[in-house]
Image 1 (tube, one colour):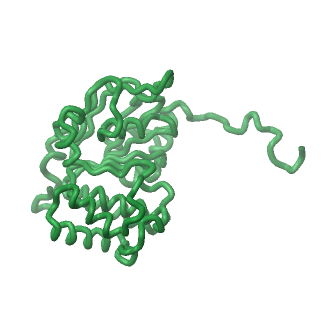
Image 2 (cartoon, one colour):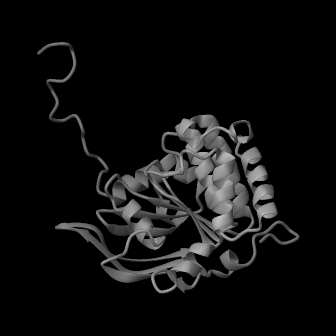
Image 3 (tube, one colour):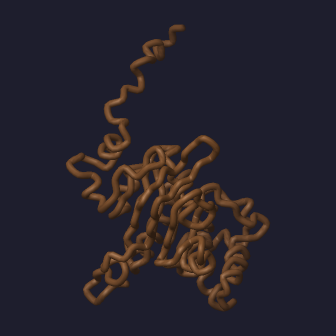
Length: 270
């Protein structure tokens, strides 16, 4: 929440953890995707979970949100165990997963109406919130269009509307800007900034450091299934000129010459 001076107060200000992860492991056959991570994500912050492709970000978020059962470890969201009290946790979170699957033969408005009623919201409240979300996310003109005909950016926005409809305490987003045009990205960004300004928590994964640096005030860097660094953005960046440079050093990619063995490339010769 925001006090009379415009400062955020409440959970985020007191240092309460929105998410607590302890000893989290996940293997797929011989492949270790997440290797025993411990992590606390503070409430009331805009948090970036960053790492290269294959770092384990999506697997971690899937376990944190109850979509994938861990091999070992515990996860608490807003103080509740994800696997012991799944219904209570899922009532308090919103999720925009990677590879979002929607009921494509419904229109955008029908989708929100259906999901709102599944959440147990009164019909009139669902209709009011759906109208507001469709308007803010610039989907009002497409609200009666079938989701199957939506573009990638429109799908991301209707997915975000669905995740926000029940006013969750914590919002989890997996690559929310991937494949999204600049106009849609700006719209999504504005909604997320408004949401966190109220004291709610956003956790989103990305491998685009410039985006994370411009949006987040707290980050966790992941590579090879492990957390390499975490904390306020300024602390993780340290003396590096940018988060990108700090990230490359943390994951061991700084100074790598990608073209050193490609002396045959270019010039048109064979």
